[in-house]
Every structure is written in structure tokens, then in C-alpha cells.
Image (cartoon, rainbow, N blue to C red; front, side, top):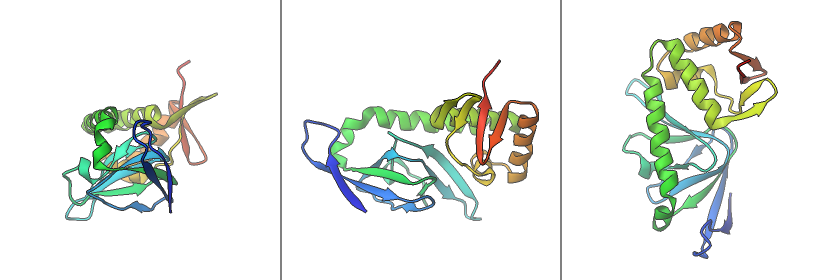
Length: 190
């Protein structure tokens, strides 16, 4: 579904089209545009020759995503929630230098987390990263407002779903976090 809205740059009076996607839908790869996430969350991913998913990043409101930002093939953008994106054509990319720099910084930060050892530190650092990116303050701490499955987390961290589940249970026993329904809340330090 397309709709239009006035460009975010008041100097250019073009109409910027918006697209709506549902959870688990794939945003079509296009070499001629970047997508600005207006609402929702996505992950970019690829897969190995054996079919193992490799998560390249998690992206939310204000982030730019798209095939022109990656040399990885195959490249896919999967919606983790309902998502609204706007189309950013190449002649407007120069206006988004801060968003492009943010994309690079987030990708590098996630890459450094994936190389942490031991796995408990890796998972905890990933949860902290998610809480900064998708978190919102609640009475008990910071709620990660993204329903990432244990399998999705294991794909990011290059481990097994069983290991993620075991470590999340350990963190819960240590009272570092608690789970409410399918969401994780990182406890505030006392």
C-alpha cells in the first residue's frame, strides 16, 4: 500500500511515498532507493550456503536500510513488527548523512558484540544494545520493545537457541532481568 507525504526537507516539495508492511513480511530489495523506517522494526539478514541465517542488523525508527548499503548477497529485510517506511530516492541520499553514519556505527557496534566472550557476556551486551535501541523505561527497568525470539537472538550471536534460553533463565535467576509475557525487562540497578 502506498501513500504520500511531503518530504522531510522543506526545500524540496516532492511527495515521498510511504509503504506499509506487516510482521514477517519481506521489504522488496531495490537498488534504486533506500527505505527510511518511520515506525516499527526490521532485521537485515543473509544466509550461508548451508542455509544458516546470519543477522546483519536490527533497525528501527529513523534508520535507513536497503540494498545500496550492503555488498552482501543474498540480502533480505524482514519486518519484525508492522512497519511503515518511506522511500528515499538516490537524489535525496545526501540529506541523510547522519542516518548513514548511524547505520555504520550501529553495524560496527553489533559486530563488536558478536565477538565478545564468553557467550554470557555476548548475550548480555546484546540485550543492553537492544535496550538502548528499542527500550523504553518502565517502573521495573527498561523494557525491550521488540519481540525477538530465542532463535533470532541465537542467529545474531552465532550460538544455539538452547544456549540463549539457558542464559536468559540464568539472568532471570540472578535478577538481572525478568520476562513479562514475551518481552524482556532489564532491571534497573538498585
